[in-house]
Length: 269
Ligand SMILES: [Zn+2]
Image (cartoon, rainbow, N blue to C red):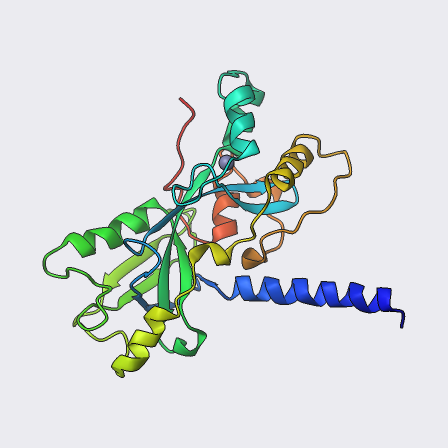
């Protein structure tokens, strides 16, 4: 084989490994099955709730972490700029549809270990506002307190229900374990879990400003053949069917993150 072929294959393999690494940094509950998880103290931030915003499902690109609206990142976002300059004041139907597609959508990512899968290390669970609130309320409830405390915190039992006629997105039910427990029986191991927790941003593909411009352009002019851009490997799912996406794109959002309610939808004012 020529060196060009070898280096081409190597680049592909590296990209694949990188994708797998990122995919392994996120976790989501399997619908219909109870999982027991433990929130891990997050050394890279002041609390475990990493509030992030995403531009979602723009053409081929499924997930773009927005550097502008995610507080913890400092960066400019061409998609938000376009939204502000060209879309926000456009009251036409097309303007509303564009707004709904392009606006940054909220997700909090919480570092957790999954009981029975401790060897997989800390992963980030992406939750919407409702789930976020119900977990945050446990922290504020004096009966529970800091449930991420490695010595006297509590596990959480999580069930994501399947969508049904009453709940078209399904729900995420959370309840704290009956008694407090350690993050790990072996306190050295517990310490290690906390110390080796990755930074949340490692779970997502980082795009440059220019790459995000290309993603936006490809979305706005879908017929033009755009250069392929890497999509977020953490969410390696089949394309969402057109007919299940409602006007707000909620269904596709949920299919994407697989969690699960229409909770973080905001109407255009
Ligand atoms: Zn943005």
